[in-house]
Figure 1 (cartoon, rainbow, N blue to C red):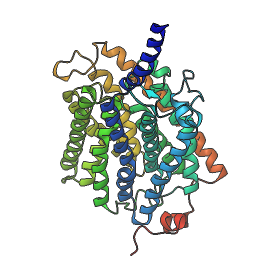
Figure 2: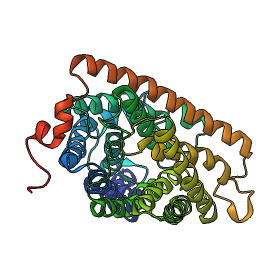
Figure 3: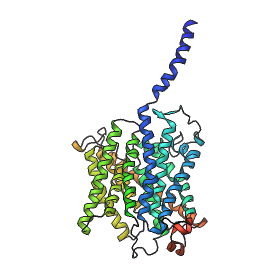
Figure 4: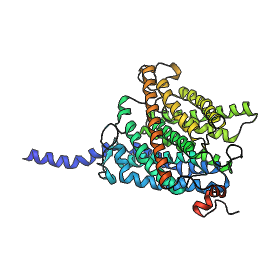
Length: 425
């Protein structure tokens, strides 16, 4: 009896310490920091980046769209989004065991960090993805249609794809390498933006009327916020304060620098002068392209990926607007869609441990086999996103109407959608 009593007393005394040992304070602190950094990417980073790129009559509408998406997605994530993405389900969608975040308590652990921190970290990814899509239909979509599309798109596109890749779904089990969202974030956002541009048609006056950014200072400021925030996006995806996070941060920075410098040089050679817009667009291309590979490649591989992003995404931007005449207002598809796909495929190459100085963190698996898996991942996510986005746009257009009238577009969305001005001048 004495031994039994001592055992019970020991369990009572030891259990809190044992539970505390399961929680890693350093990892928790880093993911808390990363969560703030990723939210900072959307508000104010992406908001300012996009707002500076549109004309003065639409600056407030873009800021409002990003802000409202942040609110809407947060509520959906609480009610059902987190559960469908990450709770146990099947190969294609999660279950409802965490409906209204049931079971997410102060002491529940995901890995070695609080589940509440994990859920919030993943929420910031869910926020920025539909916010990226805004760039495809900027300056011409009704605010009500934008809200309805963003909410439904989150449920039928973003959340299932997240489960496929990170929540125990079929792409993750296949072995797809997507460290921080090449398919989940960038391919889905880019394809949805392209679909929006094709369904809605170009802005009035495109391409003959100049539609230059109204405030490049705001755009460059937002771009700087994106660059810094992206360290939380990629290095935070290690879900630990360790060497993987450090390498992901280093790779992210090198790719961003290479992408910006490459795009700037291409413009300099082709047009005679390097532009600030080209430099920051190349930076975003470099960041988006390294995202899926950031936790698998070394700095030399990241340099190659960044240079490739600058070349390929620049070419895609020119081709889409000048050759095809598609008005993806803020170049979401050629930068994020093409960049995300390129980076996902190149992750299958540079993750290999057999490339000398360009080797990544892989285990020596055959490059060809991994690249095939990467291509399947990109293609399946792109096709799924295109089909579902097209259906959503058509249904919303029939119910609410997607686009403002010609007079409203001429007047600007700031006044006719929000009855406010971005600048009181």
